[in-house]
Length: 151
Image: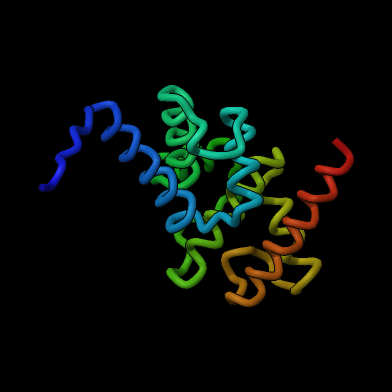
């Protein structure tokens, strides 16, 4: 005999929201675990999405959508004019990750372009090759860790 489990609308909504959070964070933005936990902590004060209530899930979703969506690009141009317009497909996820790291650190795209100039003698982040992009993310991660120790 097979038991049927009744799933409420709230449970389905929670599951769908958590799935959306993970898709946006992992697939679209390519956030690593440390950056993801920092974003959760900054937006909602928790370190695991399982601990989020309904309002917290919505706040995190809004922030992830802001960082990854088309509206985020328009808003970012107003706030951060050096945001890359349309990065190549091979580096687009890493550009999203860089954007999230810069937003969390309250830094502008000019900071990332400056790192690219200093490390690789390339004027803009979107002109870097995939290996260079990964090394730039590592440099931003070191900066993130350094700021974490000081705070």
